[in-house]
Length: 387
Image 1 (tube, rainbow, N blue to C red):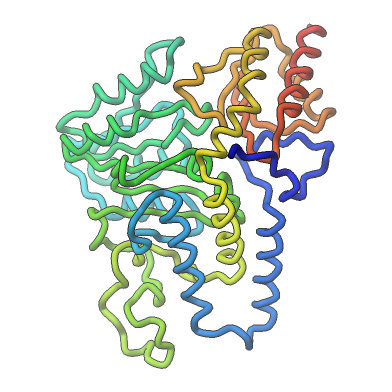
Image 2: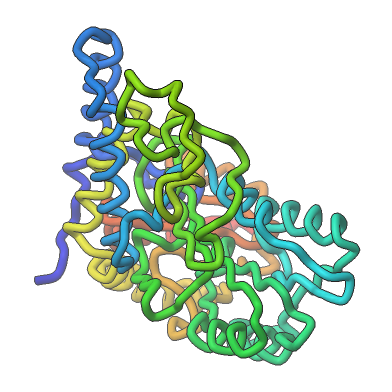
């Protein structure tokens, strides 16, 4: 059965039209309460047991593994940010001067700076892939990515989708060619995991890193990482006591342990047993797994597809629906639309979204309805009439 509107699970006032989950998600009421419970647990520190440092983290990793179709939760690491995860990845990659790292034009900065740093360290190069077409942008970009992967490609650092417009990357084809040339495939899933189906079994990335405060509805300051076999014996960027074997034995912590816990556990950030954040993240992932990303994607398509047609009639340009997502997509505004006037009208109408030059980024979820899109269309129409 198709999902119905879930606004009742959020604390969003009726007069607010929030189309900006890609920037920062609101919290479920249950996640909000979990945070309060976590604060109360810290207030009553005498009630905190050894198990509280470890068992909730295991539950959290299992929930994320379920979400991305990973068999082993030990391949999941929890961390404070996507940039932390990407730094952990880059810390375990060595390059040769003839190697290149493939990235996409206008990729999110955190997924660029780390690769520039790595390339500079080894005198390697960055190859930035662009779309050579103003139409069929997504198709052309994927074609250019695939044709650019060769024997000198050491790393492909790419999103699951493009973070600013929702354009889809053909990850199955990219993964296949990456493996043919022994290139590592590192995926940033910050703008898709939780709202768009993803399977590590299908895509077989070497690492998947994603922020947790957007489509995973966690607090600001949480993220997740999946690490494949390449990183099984890697070096973490910090030496956290709880990532070592037998760390559950508090009385024996000074029996210093040379071995890490298996697989990706070594990459988890220190204090990852955070009583507040972990409780919130668990509640969020429970709900997302219950809904399922496919059902979320279908819901977003249902509430937005009529609006997309109307927006195109107003002169807006939007990528074909077959080559982009429905929870997040970019809209190129008509050239004759007064941006400053439009921003003013959005503010008056309590409509929240993101601007990227002459583009706006729409990111909707289960708390949105068709009426939210009608408000946006009416706002654009009124500005165009006044120009």
